Image (cartoon, rainbow, N blue to C red):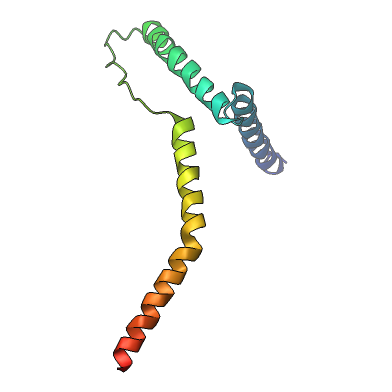
Length: 113
């Protein structure tokens, strides 16, 4: 009997953990717009160092942690530049295809002369 219940309990545990992680990600704004994602990242940056210090004190660790490096990265700007680059490439694709076709035809004409 226990052999039949164990897989169900394991599956229920995995589904609960996955659902909880999805709920937390949605609730914190990670699955929203890029502005909400940036705000969630800033909140996490502010909350993590004090939490780590509290856990270190709780476990009796006195080793100081290295300082967090300052990274100047904006997910909003990275996303926007990637979208712009993709759309630009797609808009230039017909012109480039025509140019490459003409170059290929010219090459073949030169070979047959």
